[in-house]
Image (cartoon, rainbow, N blue to C red; front, side, top):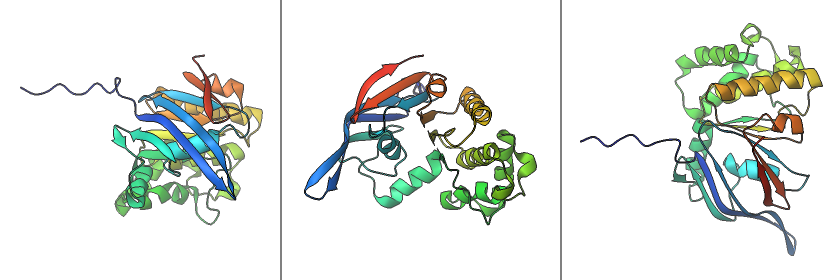
Length: 236
């Protein structure tokens, strides 16, 4: 008799267990994370908030496999992450995690479509698929008509949409956004916030770091950090 399929709602997509991150500084050390435990379930939208120095960026870097815990456990899709070697981490990062940064990080010499294609190179996708997948991602964020423009020809909101398309092109299981509206005016920031709402509504798992209370309260859950620890969790 066939076993029933596992209920994805029961197991978190990402799970941190008592995660610490300590950075040496001369004869002393800086404690960036001090025993953080956190679950994010598939399809959830979580905002991380806290004052400067609270550990938000470090937490996002560990979730995105850009950094490793000093100690503690990190599971992604039920697989332990902290013991993976650099090549295994790169594969996980390139195929399963999309990143959106405050400063866009678009390559000025490339067209918008070529910028969106770049993760496909590192993910090992067949070259013949690149253009179609890039255009599909750009259409998804409402930027299909700008595919052959250069980043210098985009507005701030369009540049952030292109960055989001680049994050989505590999169809990641987890989308991480670091201050995604931080460099945008109020109107454009609202457009990007609405786009993130739409992506989440269509099934994307989103974790974002923000100082913006209004943006955070559009998430299902707000995790507040202070001094490297989870101070509070709220459901707006």
